[in-house]
Image (cartoon, rainbow, N blue to C red; front, side, top):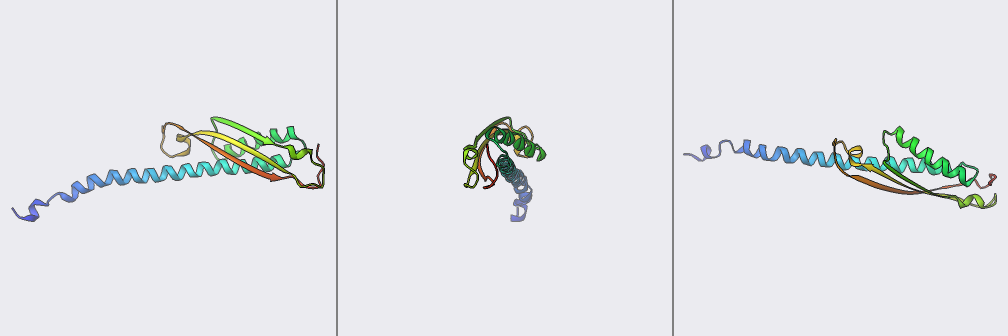
Length: 143
């Protein structure tokens, strides 16, 4: 037997071993990228919610606006939290007009991995926490 006869079919075996490995690697890269985009969606929605709170005229109104704006923005991006926690520090509304004031919002959203990554049926969840701030208009009336 010649050396050429001994190596016959070696490239088929190599392809059979490498192809699934490369496909798995590409799927992993796609899943990680999609998870990052999901986190970006939550961050964007949190910033929109913080801005909505800064447009409110009272602490109670600010807290209501944060939840509404966050869920609306997130649903427009095709995402939904299975668990949502909103903490608004709206103490800035107690400052007098003319003073610099900032509204702080911390949003914690738990999403299933299946919603974040393109792999259906992926088990588990990811908790994403975003803290944002938005300034109040310095000369607007506050309650």
